[in-house]
Amino acid sequence: MLFLSMLALGALIGFVGAGGAGVVITLLTVGFGVPIHTALAVALASMVFTTLSGAISHFRQHEVIVKTGAILGAGGAIGSILGANVSNIMPARILSLMTAIMILSSAVILYVKIYHSAWLSAHFPVRHALLTGQKLWVYGILIGIANGFLAGAFGIGAAAYIQLALMVVFGVPLLETIGTCMMVILPISAAGGLGYLANGRLDMAIFFQTLLGLMIGAWFGAKATHLAPRPVLKAAIVALPTIGGIIMLAMR
Image (tube, rainbow, N blue to C red; front, side):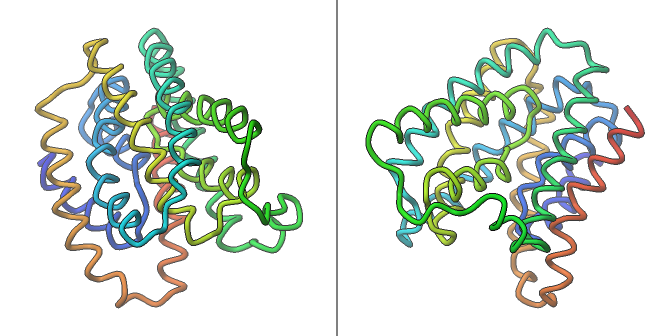
């Protein structure tokens, strides 16, 4: 049942083109009674593999700002390990609440980006040139640590936060934000997954069923993306984490 559920969820994630880590956590905890710490570990470790192929594809298409991604990713790996260790000692009830809040906050950012881009541009003006020099290193490490900590502590990819930072702070063009974001998430998810594994939180049986279901389902779901009307896709991208966060908040 777990594998079949992840197969269906993977198809939905592939269809809307969203990471869906928050929904994975919700399904594991609410649907299958998996302890929150284990669910976070599984979701974070799964992201290593679900984002790898996307990152490689974007790199081949020259849609990755490698230096910026590497610096953010290095800081993110540090923050992710710290977050995983903090999560390990956090009571399950508090951790569930914080994770639900993080999932919902990601949904809010996605909603603003998709439906109120003009407001976002007015209040968070996009940098029009790539950040370089000492500022790139300082801001990259600090912002990487912050995003990595959120991802490691609460099992989400923090993609919404990373993409926003890439455009506003680092001047990464819109087309390159997706590929660069995937590059940043790779070391974050790998380091966080190792942190949870070292703390004995990663259940390998649940992990492999989740990973296999998501990867197979996402491959089929992605085939249908171009068939859906654009308004439907936009609504689904926002609805997926919103529903996951609300369910987790209500059922924790």
